[in-house]
Length: 271
Length: 260
Figure 1 (tube, helix red, strand yellow):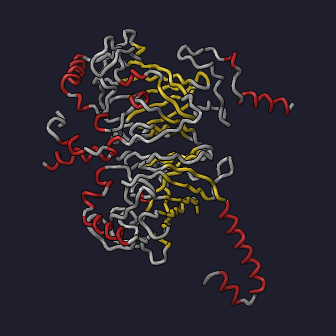
Figure 2: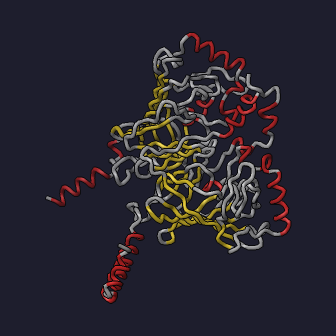
Figure 3: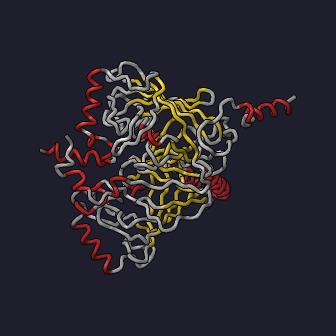
């Protein structure tokens, strides 16, 4: 009897058979991946090198129908509202248009600032997930940034503390890692199309492993100062297929030898 | 009442006390080896750590200077506590010191490199998994991944933070750091190295709240011999301790506007 219960407990810890995975990948031509594995504590093992499969998202969260100089055409990742547009309040829609016309130098990434959440998740060059005891750590190549997601249920930091990457708190809902992100500063943008938010931004991310090589990523973005309602983005993260891949260092400003001209000439002055 | 041992001596029962004393030493030894451990048996180095010394001001013994607190040397080898520079390099360090306001890479918000990042006055956090150990630093949100998977160093690629490969020697995490670029300094006083620098770091958890940090620094282009620094790092024991951000470049850009 004891042996039996031990066996069934072990079975719970083992990965589900392939047949039990209801979703199938629709993108890419790689051979079908096996099921994701699990850590000794039974949680999904998402460790490894990951990258968005939708390179266009870095340019614009919304669909961009016609290619222009510097911006390719591409499909947006907004799944709610159904029209795929960010539900801006009227003043904010004007601000976004003005950002594109006059203020592209304010794009925080142009200054090598941290990208914020969720932008960090679809900024090129990928990231590594580590799952040490008690937390999930995301290490990004771009801007050598990182996010620490404690899983111990501690409350968010005081409102007065504002961070580019915000304050992340994680919890598991079944096999989905849910991350609540608050305390972001109003300096980050969502993309290279001037889409923006205020300090009231509240992001809830959901990381759902689908198979060994795929994580479905969703983020609900709420900001009552800027949007008329919350909206949601969704895309797949793919595991880097190269077994010898390892992440490098993209230092950004630290490697910029022409810093004086970059930040201090008339043309480069913030408007 | 003096110490217990003295009391025992007064009672002339030293013969009895000696075995007890030895026994106590044994207990102390055993406690030393019961550092917190992870399921894989290795010491648990996880936590938020910070140096509490003046090493970032100057690794050698030094008087106070603009922006630098006076302090003693953290160099334990050679015994004189001095960096064993080649003559040309000693002259270069003096020049660096004089021009440190503009030349110190940290004053331009560049990544500080290894080992300097370990003793800057900002906390850092260690995360352990069997294949990788990550160290995340509050200062300019620098991070390092220490490969524990036995893969060799990369060739011909330079990094601000070097290429780190680790292994355990008993309870000590030993990290071999190569592929450093030549842009970083070792402290605010212009102590420097070339791209030939090879650093071996040793992290040993000596108590729940202290982590002994040692680094051997070798660079045949700049020094006459390898040399070594050593210092304790201290754990942040606040229950709500966590890393925040020091996004250096933001403050550098906004500073002129504030002073106008």
